Length: 341
Image (tube, rainbow, N blue to C red):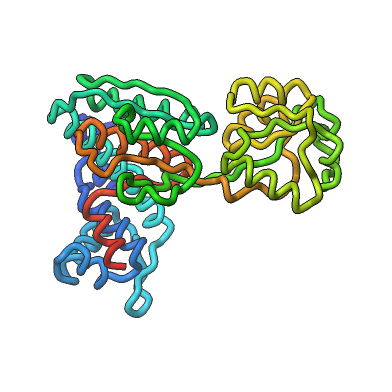
């Protein structure tokens, strides 16, 4: 039996799909396919990339010829991705995102960003988001340093005004600060009602109505805070009032310990409550969440121009987008397609 020499040579493969992924795939292919999935028409993609329609059609034809399979179907003026086309788009989005993250890392390292960034947050901001942002920042700016404090929002805003902080994170949009502070919502998550599993309402099968909350003690936010007022108004609408034996606390660690003890009801951000629910130490009560407290807002001084502060803010937005399941800022070509749509 004679074995063809060609079939034994390393690096040679007659499979067109294998060959395409080993040497034929280009980033321009992925950008075009992802944009096509977003816009649905070749003419719109061509306009977004500032090229002619035949140029885009030629790129699509090159992909199909190289793969030996169809990736789009023409439906009049529109196009529809085949199953293979959708698979390429799904993985293409991930590839383009990682390339953008690499660009950010390289740009920050090449710029040699240094300096000291001071960040503060209220206690209900989920720690994984801050930790993720710090990790990104320290990797991209190894010459920089970072410090962090927890405090009430009024204290954080005063520190910002006095120059003691560069960025603060809270749960509310503020009025009357427009001339000196920028504020932007990073993401949203609701506050939910929780109890420990040992609480009378903590059994997972027990139905819970608003009136069932009346006999029990609460852990409440600091009096006068927006969170306190929102909770009091919500409960008051159902004729539930706080008792003299409630605990007023701004310490997340203490609140969680007290909730687990089984003696109190409370509210927590969904992400924090979910992690303890998964561990079997808390129950999220089947009641409507408090959407009004759901924003995580970043505050910065209008005159803040330090490169390290801007870099950390970008890292915060990226970490927040990852946490909420949204995509961070996309590569330039893809951003242009969104504007075109």
